[in-house]
Image (cartoon, rainbow, N blue to C red; front, side, top):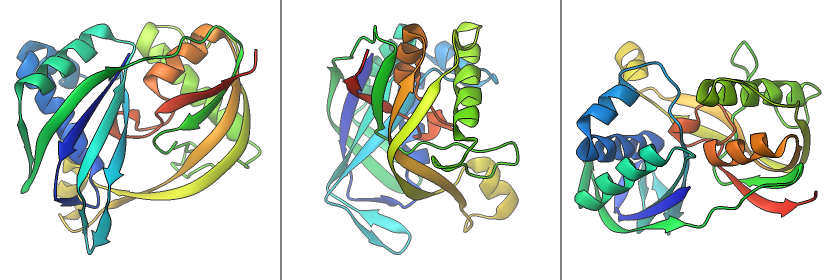
Length: 241
């Protein structure tokens, strides 16, 4: 299931993904405090990924000036999306540091059902693949497929208790490197408020061959490291059977 929510916002930090994480957390807390505590006061995987679309934006120093932002959230977990939807409905204004987001509209989106073994995906938010040393792995690297399989197996194992039903065949078709600037509370506490994290990710158009059940869940959960911070949301472009 997927939902999209648009916000009126005049400016925001360049490292804006954590601002959207804050919105999601606040909406869940507003809907059900106990559910929020259960989800975020544990090391368990969060069952969602999201992407963002910025309207008429321009960068000025360490801020982005824009007309608004649209967030798309995907999850196979109906309870999560129910609480997110209810919380977004109940609040009109969300605050993050000294920035303000005013909700405009929220709606559910149709979701595709995957029944075939090969699907062409494109990323709606950049895909972050790293090796064991946290070094980025590009789609043309010889071990890219190995790392994508490891990520997919881990994501599925954490969500449903077992990993891939069959190994994935990964065929990157087109890609573009994206360097993402971000920060979080832990990093700010140890490095100071002026420092940021840099992630080398890729906007990718690729085919994935595997078990249809695995492909469906990866489409819903996202395929990337840091999915819950705005990486790895997928869209179906073509089904090849």
